[in-house]
Image 1 (cartoon, rainbow, N blue to C red):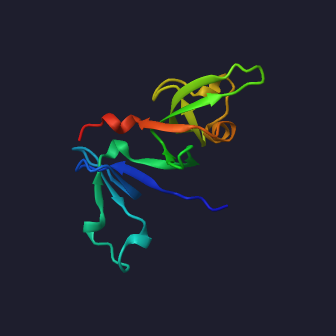
Image 2: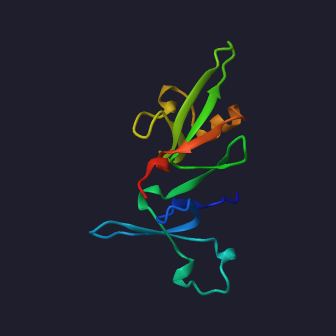
Length: 146
């Protein structure tokens, strides 16, 4: 099985997101993060530093290997809206945050609140199979200071 492994991080310069592979540098004065674009986009085999994009460390997140109704990739930290259908027509609208936990991508009621699965609902993959209209409605990082 081939997995598409990709990360993104909010650019320090305020120009949206950078996509590729992250480099996180841990420092006493605060972490630094850089996003390296996919190697296929780089000229030659050298890695000059001008190809690295500075990103806000707390915004770096991984692609959750699912896409929403608009074919938009879903990442950790994305806010999503979806419906849980049941056989009694008691369809329930939900919103939640994508988070990696216990070896799977899950949808949480909020960043810190409990996983929807704690009451029996499976993770993100099941939700995407059950509701083909799941939609990314934002990110927890939309309010990050630039």
